[in-house]
Length: 291
Image (cartoon, rainbow, N blue to C red):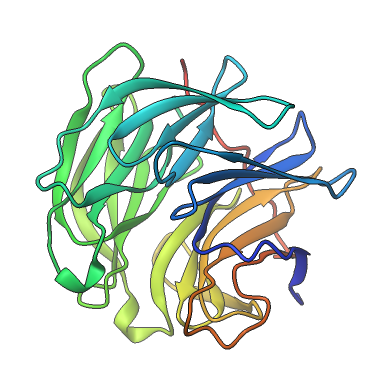
């Protein structure tokens, strides 16, 4: 179960790892440095592309590029081999205040892209964050609101349960929702896990093939696995204090990749790196955005 450092990325805020099986590669973002990054499992080579705004979340698309949530809305990204990045706006969002950006996001099993928003200064304790649903060719839909730092988006294997957390220290809750796969509508919000009872704050998440929910425990250097009824099943350690998000990948989807944060107060030399764990279970292929 020992974590292996695969990229000493030194990311300010590494987030949103996505495995691309066709490339045998892992993509992820560094939010404040506005970068899309890629690690080839075959060659070990790392590439990076600069984005015009802070880049928070990504999903691969059915047309071979990326949909991304950034500061002002949703964009299409096409990374080029020469290091350039073609960026095209898809849809903007109307934030409640100017000092906001999108945060955690991913696709549901039907290819809709979801992303939450947050105020840049978490210390403001401002519950202005909302959860957006975006489908190509349609207006952005505001589905839920009242969050400080929405995080932990994930969907059950059958797509009928949606998970969402608020990682802010004042909240630290994970909720489950019934999810209408036809309309893309969550309902019946209920407490799934109160993270005040466990080590760490809930950050980014993934769901494995058995339907269990994996959540990075920020500030605790752990990744927790919860069963569908909210019972803690196991906790895996990473050698940094602030893991941010996890994703399944590898040829058999049995590797758990974990991104992390490197800040001025971090005592860990590996902080900001990308790690690989053997979780003992298989994950699921990440859905693509239907563009």
